[in-house]
Image (cartoon, rainbow, N blue to C red):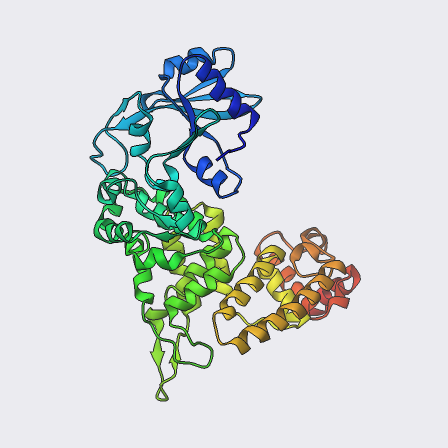
Length: 443
């Protein structure tokens, strides 16, 4: 097998080889190349010790990225490349990182410490593909399998269990039965993993083409960072709109929304509090009154706990809070929502509502799809005609009111909001003359 290496990568390998060291590209770049995917980066492993790497590339900018772990970053033609010495790891007392590492001269020892067989291959132009653990067969069979003993790999770094599901989702590979059983057996180790690392892997699963978040839930791993999700299991929805329980509805809606992290998180959490507000009437019909507001509150707690940034938290919470609001192809209704949400959030809310209904009975999805087309058309008209839907669009402002004799303070804000309410219903009144007249008549 031949892998087309970038010019800079080929140069690095050749320079190390010419100085008497073994060197290879390894890990995800080899896997992705075999799968005809574009590697995000090129990891290089070598028998050269860190100081020998720095001596070899002394004419280039060098960043001592992690010398204690054998990693040196070399900058060539403004691109950064990580070069790491062959190593084997010591004990993992915290299930996160090795207590110590040992530099070795054997590629096999280096590859044996890696997580999955598909990530444990190496390549250079002279020797070709080095596959000591069956990674190529697993790629052909579309299987995620641990290198060696799965229990040992997960005890070394418990995050590997989530990574297995991430690759299951991004590559659409099955998880080997032994690896899957080991995840169930060792899931308790997740309590040792920082939420920042978990969040990164969760994001990658959510943004993958297949978005197999259901596997993450059913593995039991989500119990350790979103335990609230367990309440959705088998929460039935006996009503006109739904044919799925809350859990499966959530998975389906999350899969169906476009690949945008805010939108994915919104769908993942939009019904998180449905079980807590569920009621059933005398006819056996289920109701979930107030679940939008309750879910928004819980979503804020969950996202804050997972250390998402404030921008993401606020956007997701707002979309969940409004996801049940009535939106009709009516200019007045649309402008009032635009005033509350702004254009970007309003457009995203339409996508959220469509994804929500895509996981309901088909007739409700079709109605929402047709409504979205009409609503977007009206929205475009409002924007193109520059119709007023916020205070900044009013033909007068606070200075005009002060000139009329009003004192600075809350009263000015109250008057402007009253005028905005009038203009939202009667856009033709948004002229300075008309608004001043309204103020004078109300005094």
